[in-house]
Length: 221
Image 1 (tube, helix red, strand yellow):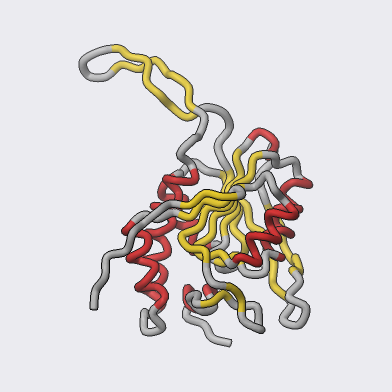
Image 2: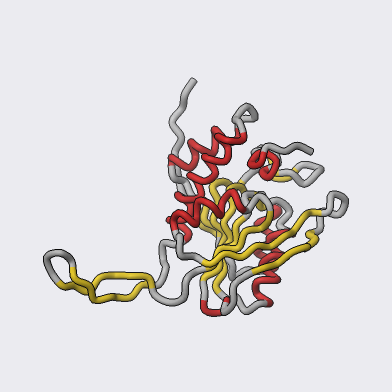
């Protein structure tokens, strides 16, 4: 039986849970274990576009004098240096591709981090990013905020390079990950499509979508 769901957007402790109906509908299809990798990738890209609107809602603006075909005017345009999108490899690229369609002029950084299967601690193996981060908004993207260790390690590194204005975008967030990130970086706002129930004994998000990287790229463990 179908039922109507009352939607509310929550924002507490620097967490924005985005309630857009299209995001929630697409996320439901992604959760289904029968959804193929190609469809999964397409939906993640579409969701990242929608989430990107919310995460960039308050970008700084200035006025630029232009001429339309009919008149001269002072028109709004983005101010300051181009923003940077940091993808936490490998699954972060699933969100990166959609955000680059939204902001094609953005600079891109990559952070290679994997989670140790025994300790769940983050192990970094690669970093490459643009310069002058202190003057840019940095969006850090990873579909899953589970234990929070990878997100905290990534933001630690970005801050060490000078970044001051940082936002984290994820598809799903576990309460444990939100707490860990808030404790380490209370100044970083998290944008997510869903705050989930919690983690299982292996550190996977419940009810979740499974392993995001495997489902994006069609691989298996």
